[in-house]
Picture (spheres, rainbow, N blue to C red):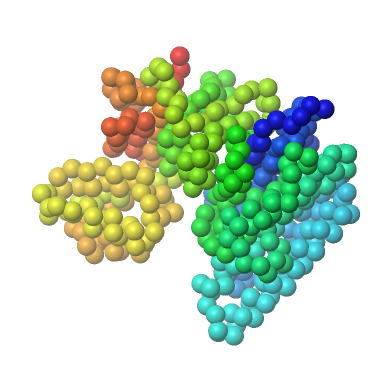
Length: 463
């Protein structure tokens, strides 16, 4: 076997982890001369974190939501434990020691139940509030999924004859107070990735609380922090699909194409509308450290994937990606006092800040400001405060469709996009583009979300 290559840190997503037999063949053991000096940060198996916390897209309550509302959570934990054991059984054929794996996860679930009961008792005493206890419960539950998948992965590799290490960053039963960065540094201090395959939990326990800081983006933050601390030459993200010119489920697999190269600015634009190539709080440290991100389809291993760097600008002006969201609301704030008043929109921004709402875009004229926010943030309390301050506040459920690229500064491209939308009788409710010209955002009726993407992709991306 040849000497190991330069260090890479690689993130494997949850849906991809559920097909771990293919991950072994396509990623980890694909090249027998390139097995070591690769640290894998793994997510929980597909759907497990949704059951532990809540469904990421629909908000359907999981164990955490059941617990914080004072409902019976133990039946849900029992169901989850049975599901995790079934997952274990499915991996027996590729080398998992099911008895050891079951013992590992059942012990942790049993201890988790004990801790949740203690939290219940503490809340019942009245000495601590929910706001003090609930974040800890969320951290505890979130850690279970990654402990399960990381332990299994290391066990499978060990039983196949490879030197592999389960790198547990969850701080399980560790009373030593450490920040996230300190725990990563302390854990990897005694490991040599050039001699062992490191399988690390996507969850990292820290005094600041990785869930409190980053919520469901926590596994990518762990991945980013490890890559930066250990000075990886590349940070690789393995998913079940390519980063494509549009969603293949909307356009069709035969009509989209993978994006070969792009930059961090484009990655930020994608994250802003919910299509996360990588969580923005995970990408910033990598960008600052000058570490390139490579996004790969784990089930198309011969493809080089998408390389994301700081300085890349497409040599020819073109639209790289059409994307968007149909889960947004337009806040239309009309007030005749607005015209000519300096700082009027700051009042709106202060209300959004108080309610913890980040807007996607803002369009303004003399007496109207449209602010696009996510549906989940458009709460009654926010609307009540805005309506108490301004003459007329209306809401409209809409969709936003974006044409994104590292170099779309081309005369006529906006006109071409508008003409294409008009050809399908799609009215543009508002449009937004900055002078940097990396993202044209069109607000259209919600029912026209899919048709708008199709027509823009055909007009701007098909070459």
